[in-house]
Length: 479
RNA sequence: GGCGACGUGGCCGAGUGGCUAGGCAACGGUCUGCAAAAUCGUGUACCCCGGUUCAAUUCCGGGCGUCGCCUCCA
Image (tube, rainbow, N blue to C red; front, top):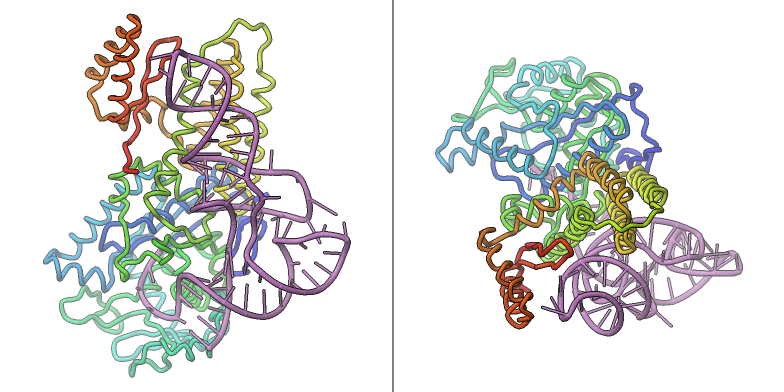
C-alpha cells in the first residue's frame, strides 16, 4: 500500500487516485535563464522516480512539467547578453533537456511553456475579477488575498503572521500589501501581450494554475516542486485556482528538500551553486543520480565531491558483482541453487517495494540492493553449476531492468561501466597485459608486478582469472 | 519576531518502544605467485536533562545546537 507524505495535511496518507488507476501529476519546472544546477537535478530526479514507481505499480501516469519562459530574470539575461528573449529561452530549454536526458529522466508527457498559455491566463484573471477575487489597478491585476478564506492552508500561515513578517512588498498600487500580481503592466522593451487591461505580461503564479487546469483538469492527483515553492508560489496557485473554479485544485502536495553546500542552501543568490554540467564532467551522470537518491527526498542533502565519490564506489560495488556473475565459472555439482536464488530475489522485491511504498524511501530501497548483492556474492563464492548460473543471470537481467524502470539506475553493462573510465587505448593496454602474462609464465614476478603497479597508477586494475587476465578501469581521485 | 525541519558509530545515511539497516573508509583472517574483487571478523551509534514504561535512540516536556521558509529560488 503506497503512502505519500502530503504537505497539505502534514502527514503520510494512503495514496488513492481520483480516478481508478489514473494518476495526473504536475511539477513546477524551471525558469529558463541559466543552466540547471544540482538542486534542479534533485527535484527532477525525485519526481521522475515517483513517476517511474507509480508506473511500476500499474498506474497510468500523465506527467506535466512546465517551462517558465517569461520572467524578470530572463529579461535581465537578455539585456545583459544582447540576445533576444526567445533565443535565451530556447537555448536554456535545449540545455535543460540535454541535462535531464543525461540523468535518465523521462521526458514529461507535456512540457508546456508559459508563453503558450497567455490566453488561458487572461481568461483566468477575468474570471477572478468577475467573481470578486481580483481587481485591476493601473494596468496590473492583483489577487485579493483576504477574499480567499483558506489562504495559508498549505504553508500553515495566517495572514497576521505574514504582515508581522514585514517582508511584504509595500506598493501604493495594491489595495492590501498581501495581494499578489496576476498580471503586470509591461514596461517599455519588455515582452507584452494585449489584454483587457492594456499591454502586459503574466505574473509568475498564474501560469501554473492555467497550464495545469488546461492540460490535466482539476482537481488532479499530485502537485510537486521544491520546498521553497510551498510559499508563496503553491499557496498562490491554490488561491487562484480554487477561487476561480470553486473546487479543490490538487489532492497530494509533494515537496523535495534542498541541496546544501556546507550546510547552507545552495542558491543563485548565494552564488554557491554547481551545475549539472559541472558534476557530470567529474563523474558518470548515474553516480549523481544514485547519490541524490541515497537521502530521503524530503530531507536536506549536503553535497560534496567526497560524498559523490563515496557513491561512485558504492555503485561500483554493484557493477563489480554484475561483472563477476557475467564471468562466473560453473562447477560440476549436480544440485542446483535455483530455489535459493529465487528466494533471495523475491525477498529483495518484497523489501524494495515495502521501502518505496513508504513515501518513496529510496535510501532504504537502495540498502536492500546491497543486501541482495551480498547474497549473490556469497552464492558466487560457493560456486554454482551451469544451470544455476544461467538462472541467476536471467534473474539479474530482470533486476537490472526493474531498477532502471523504477530508480533509473543500473542502465549500463558492467563492461560499459568499467571501460568508461579507461584512460589508455585498449590496444596499448592489451600489450601491457600480454607482456605481463609472458613475464608471469617465466616466473618473472618482479616484472609482472611492475606492470601491475604501473597500470594501477593509470587507474587500471588487473584481475587474473581462470579465463585469463581482465581489467577494470576506475577514475583516479586525488586523496 | 512568526512558522517549520533536523541533531544516529571515523564519514554519509535509513529506521525502530525490546530483534545486525545499508554504503564509504580503517584494521585483522581467508583466498591469490603478488594483487584486485569477494568473504568472515572487529569497532560497545543514536545532542543534553527530566518524565512515561518492565524496557526509549525511538513517546512526552524542557534545554542546547544546526538549518530552512516568511523576497526571486528546485
